[in-house]
Length: 126
Image (tube, rainbow, N blue to C red; front, side, top):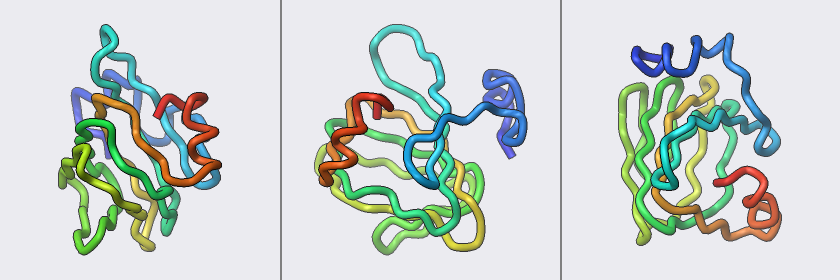
C-alpha cells in the first residue's frame, strides 16, 4: 500500500510498521525530518472515525494512501491530495468501507476546538 521511496524510508509496508496510538481509533508514525521545519507523519484512522474539529496554524498537505477521507463535500481516495491552510476549519472522517491511511505534512501545529484534544496535543506533537 505504501509507495516507494516512502516504504523504504519507513522500513516496511503497513503491516510491519510500529504505530503509536494518538486517540481511540487513531494511530500515527512520526517521520523524522531534518531541522525544526515541517513535520511529517503517517496517520491511520479506523473506518468511520471522525477527526476532532480543528483549524490550522499553517499549511497541511495530506496524501491518502489507503481507504478514503471525507472532508466537507469532498471524498478523497487513494492518491488524492488535500491542501489546507490557516483559513481552514473542518472535521474530516475516514470512510466507512476500510481504514484510512494518510501521509500528512504540516508546517505549524493544528488548532483543536475541543478541550480533550487540546490537552493531548503536546504529547502527540500534532
